[in-house]
Image (tube, rainbow, N blue to C red; front, side):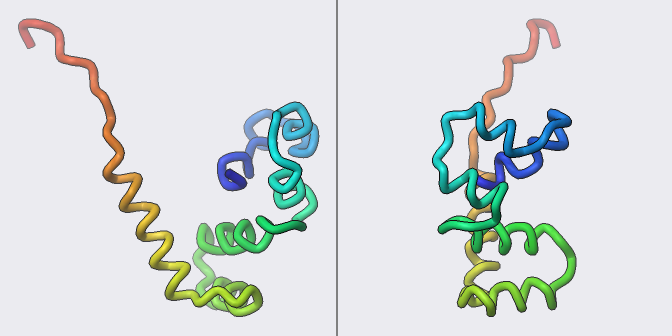
Length: 97
């Protein structure tokens, strides 16, 4: 959930705390995204490191949070594989095409 809301401030051009304050979200999500605290903060930090290209930084973050980097990478691959199996309903082509 945190990843879905992470860049909303850029999209809506207002502080993330204000945006999240208007949504019916768990306080834990707000704390992770705005305050970088709480039970989701570690996973958010790892997610942000995965988006970057600095593998050394990712390893340091994984070590700091006792998350084996290999397991983090496998979890990411499973998530991506799950997304690739999502069915996308396409409109039928118009008659005569």
